[in-house]
Image (tube, rainbow, N blue to C red; front, side, top):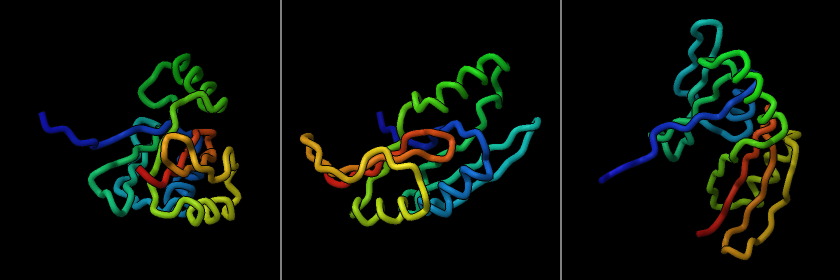
Amino acid sequence: MDLSLSHCFVTVNDPDESLAFYRDVLGLDVRNDVSAEGFRWVTLSPPSQPGVEIVLVEPHAGRSADDGDALQTLMVKGALNAVIFRTANVDEAFEKIRAAGTEVLQEPVDQPYGVRDCAFRDPSGNMIRLSQGN
Protein backbone atom coordinates (compact mmCIF):
# COMPACT_ATOMS: atom_id res chain seq x y z
CA MET A 1 0.00 0.00 0.00
CA ASP A 2 1.40 3.41 -1.00
CA LEU A 3 -0.06 6.24 1.12
CA SER A 4 0.84 9.90 1.46
CA LEU A 5 -0.69 12.65 3.56
CA SER A 6 -2.97 14.92 1.57
CA HIS A 7 -4.98 17.08 4.01
CA CYS A 8 -5.27 17.72 7.73
CA PHE A 9 -7.78 19.97 9.46
CA VAL A 10 -7.19 22.58 12.16
CA THR A 11 -10.22 24.06 13.90
CA VAL A 12 -10.03 27.85 14.33
CA ASN A 13 -12.32 30.52 15.78
CA ASP A 14 -11.57 33.36 13.38
CA PRO A 15 -10.52 32.50 9.82
CA ASP A 16 -9.05 35.98 9.16
CA GLU A 17 -6.96 36.01 12.34
CA SER A 18 -5.82 32.45 11.73
CA LEU A 19 -5.05 33.12 8.08
CA ALA A 20 -2.79 36.02 9.10
CA PHE A 21 -0.96 33.73 11.53
CA TYR A 22 -0.52 30.68 9.29
CA ARG A 23 0.27 32.72 6.16
CA ASP A 24 2.15 35.75 7.50
CA VAL A 25 3.87 34.35 10.60
CA LEU A 26 4.45 30.71 9.60
CA GLY A 27 4.89 31.44 5.89
CA LEU A 28 2.38 28.95 4.49
CA ASP A 29 0.96 29.48 0.99
CA VAL A 30 -2.79 29.95 0.51
CA ARG A 31 -4.27 27.31 -1.82
CA ASN A 32 -8.01 27.93 -1.35
CA ASP A 33 -10.26 30.37 0.49
CA VAL A 34 -13.88 29.24 0.31
CA SER A 35 -17.13 30.45 1.88
CA ALA A 36 -20.18 28.19 1.87
CA GLU A 37 -23.37 27.92 3.92
CA GLY A 38 -22.31 30.71 6.27
CA PHE A 39 -18.90 29.24 7.05
CA ARG A 40 -15.42 29.60 5.64
CA TRP A 41 -12.42 27.35 5.23
CA VAL A 42 -8.92 28.26 4.15
CA THR A 43 -6.44 25.74 2.76
CA LEU A 44 -2.69 26.39 3.09
CA SER A 45 0.49 24.45 2.30
CA PRO A 46 4.11 24.68 3.40
CA PRO A 47 6.11 25.98 0.41
CA SER A 48 8.37 22.90 0.61
CA GLN A 49 5.35 20.53 0.63
CA PRO A 50 2.75 21.88 -1.79
CA GLY A 51 0.98 18.52 -1.84
CA VAL A 52 0.15 18.67 1.88
CA GLU A 53 -2.81 20.91 2.62
CA ILE A 54 -3.72 22.26 6.05
CA VAL A 55 -7.38 23.26 6.15
CA LEU A 56 -8.44 25.92 8.67
CA VAL A 57 -12.10 25.30 9.49
CA GLU A 58 -14.56 26.85 11.93
CA PRO A 59 -15.85 24.66 14.82
CA HIS A 60 -19.50 24.84 13.79
CA ALA A 61 -18.97 24.14 10.08
CA GLY A 62 -20.72 20.88 9.20
CA ARG A 63 -21.54 20.11 12.85
CA SER A 64 -24.52 20.49 15.15
CA ALA A 65 -24.54 23.55 17.43
CA ASP A 66 -23.82 21.33 20.47
CA ASP A 67 -20.91 19.57 18.78
CA GLY A 68 -19.48 22.86 17.51
CA ASP A 69 -19.73 24.36 21.00
CA ALA A 70 -18.03 21.31 22.55
CA LEU A 71 -15.24 21.42 19.96
CA GLN A 72 -14.73 25.14 20.50
CA THR A 73 -14.50 24.63 24.28
CA LEU A 74 -11.82 21.96 23.85
CA MET A 75 -9.90 24.09 21.34
CA VAL A 76 -9.82 27.17 23.60
CA LYS A 77 -8.51 24.99 26.44
CA GLY A 78 -5.71 23.75 24.18
CA ALA A 79 -7.00 20.19 24.47
CA LEU A 80 -6.87 19.31 20.76
CA ASN A 81 -3.87 17.58 19.19
CA ALA A 82 -0.91 19.67 18.12
CA VAL A 83 0.30 20.41 14.63
CA ILE A 84 4.05 19.75 14.37
CA PHE A 85 6.21 21.37 11.71
CA ARG A 86 9.79 20.33 11.00
CA THR A 87 12.38 23.05 10.42
CA ALA A 88 16.12 23.16 9.77
CA ASN A 89 16.72 25.81 12.47
CA VAL A 90 14.22 25.71 15.33
CA ASP A 91 15.89 28.58 17.24
CA GLU A 92 15.72 30.96 14.30
CA ALA A 93 12.11 30.04 13.51
CA PHE A 94 11.15 30.35 17.18
CA GLU A 95 12.55 33.90 17.42
CA LYS A 96 10.62 34.98 14.33
CA ILE A 97 7.37 33.54 15.67
CA ARG A 98 7.89 34.97 19.16
CA ALA A 99 8.63 38.41 17.65
CA ALA A 100 5.17 38.30 16.05
CA GLY A 101 3.64 38.27 19.55
CA THR A 102 2.66 34.60 19.55
CA GLU A 103 1.91 32.96 22.91
CA VAL A 104 4.95 30.82 23.79
CA LEU A 105 4.38 27.49 25.54
CA GLN A 106 7.93 26.14 25.43
CA GLU A 107 11.17 27.75 24.35
CA PRO A 108 13.54 25.62 22.23
CA VAL A 109 14.92 22.68 24.19
CA ASP A 110 16.82 19.48 23.36
CA GLN A 111 14.52 16.54 24.03
CA PRO A 112 15.78 13.14 25.24
CA TYR A 113 14.23 11.48 22.18
CA GLY A 114 16.62 13.24 19.81
CA VAL A 115 14.92 16.43 18.61
CA ARG A 116 15.17 20.07 19.52
CA ASP A 117 11.71 21.59 19.67
CA CYS A 118 9.53 24.42 20.91
CA ALA A 119 5.81 25.10 21.24
CA PHE A 120 3.38 27.99 21.01
CA ARG A 121 -0.33 28.61 20.44
CA ASP A 122 -2.07 29.80 17.31
CA PRO A 123 -4.68 32.57 17.73
CA SER A 124 -7.41 29.99 18.46
CA GLY A 125 -5.43 28.20 21.18
CA ASN A 126 -4.19 25.23 19.15
CA MET A 127 -0.72 24.01 20.06
CA ILE A 128 1.85 24.37 17.29
CA ARG A 129 5.22 22.71 17.70
CA LEU A 130 8.41 23.20 15.71
CA SER A 131 10.88 20.33 15.61
CA GLN A 132 14.48 20.08 14.40
CA GLY A 133 16.27 16.75 14.04
CA ASN A 134 15.36 13.13 13.46
